[in-house]
Length: 111
Image (cartoon, rainbow, N blue to C red; front, top):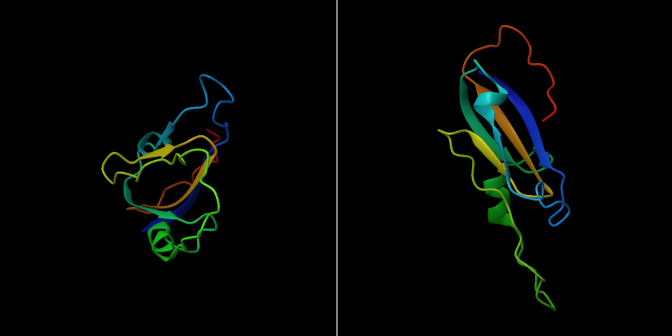
């Protein structure tokens, strides 16, 4: 199996643009056409811990005042659809596992 580290981000702020300040999707099947994606694991930003484990260990901070709004985040990556959902100003780090060795290296692609 071959693994690749993939970081995706939606750099538009909430309310910055009426058309672009929305949830966006990255379709991994379209990003890697002809490649068999066998596994996708979401990691923390520095990619040294699985996100699910990080969330379990997260500290609950006492707040003096309530925040002004709810934090919007993309959903869990569906292992069948392989679509990564990104909220405005969100960065997601994934390790993507491919079933077979790649015949040629993947080229860098800006989305």
